[in-house]
View (tube, rainbow, N blue to C red):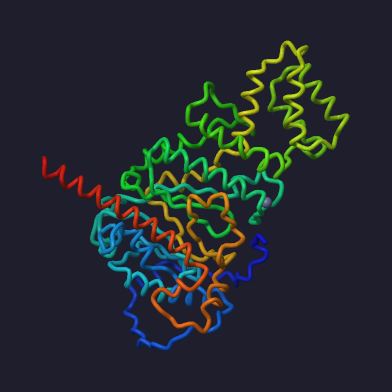
Amino acid sequence: MFQGSSNSQVNTNVQPKLPVAAVPAAVAPVTPATPAPVATFKPPPQDFESITSMYYKQLFPFRPVFQWLNHAPDPTPDFSKREIAMELHNGAYTRYRSYETPESFKKEVSFLNPARFEIGPVYSIDLINRAKYQKDSIQPVQKELIFDIDMTDYDEIRSCCSGTDICEKCWGFVRVAMHVIDFVLRHDFGFKFILWVFSGRRGVHAWISDYRARFLPDNARRSIVDYVNVFRGVSQGKLKLPRPLHPMLSHTLELLKSNFVSVVLQGQNPWGAPGAEKQLLSRLPNNGPFQQRLKQKWSEEPNRSSLDKWKDIDEIAKSKDLKTLDRNALLEAKQDIMFYYLAPRLDENVSTKLNHLLKSPFCIHPKTQKICVPIPTDQIDTFDPSSVPIATELLKEVQGKRVTENTYESTTLRPYVDYFRKFYNEQHKAERSLKRSRESEGLDF
Ligand SMILES: [Zn+2]
């Protein structure tokens, strides 16, 4: 079962927002708990605040997340100058936190117990000393290139669900968008380290961690987004792409074609309801006799589905006596329809700003309690957002078990962490070899 917010069991009491100043800038050292070799998990609590507390202390994979952000096993400035921002349960939002080690990272997150925490850029200075610096000398220097796909941007074209709900049918839009972005970033930009992460409710984030992606300035990020986003051509709900199609769009079109019938025509049936065919006709060439025949066919058989109507277009266009019909314009109109429905719809601000903050992988979504798990690229088609581990379920899985550093290994979270570690290992290998070649270039010089 897919879950919407209506199924949420989260405590939604809204607390007044506290000023950020009310949050301690540095947390007093927590008295370390005496190691208890026989400590076992208690039954999961019911309220969200206690759930996050137990999850951070005992299940959140801090070391893998540290390694991924640090690009190496031992702490480097890539981690220690990285901004971590937190939204606390009382509504306060605290920014510009940073940590020297994975241990101090875990200690403070466990102590502050945020509802969620977000990851920002690596800065030019140690954030802990930022009060000593002039404001304009505090600059973000690197961060993953991010793409954000959220079902909100598909609301005008999905008929199966609305609001925060999702189902198997509309998840198809997200799946196709992931395929397109993944393909373009690898094929046209040569990026290799693209980490897809479920946002916890109805979307996904792509974190592109290649070295050269991380150091892109805002204007270069903007150019990449402009290149990928075809919706700049939309006017009054219609899309007319320039021809000939850019090679990137020709490649993309092949991906769209193979999903258009199942995701759009069968999944959403956009022109099935009485009168909805008008919208389809308005997107086709304005050829009188051609439009007339389609109208006639669909008024005689008003129950024809969107798939039937899509086939009718080609069937009627075959008629030899439709001499004035521009078949090429028809082909292009049909392609534009596919792009309109299936090309990725992006939240551009997330991608174009180096200092944008984004929820960390493995956080708990506060409404669904689902974990923001990574999605292996080769499992985009089989990933099912309804089967993602839920925080309370994970805590039930470990109830009565011994607490260890890697307790998640005995839970259904494990395959996601294993994939994440594998992603980091490959990235680390690439970073090391890049570093070696930069050093040897430096020596040659
Ligand atoms: Zn749906």
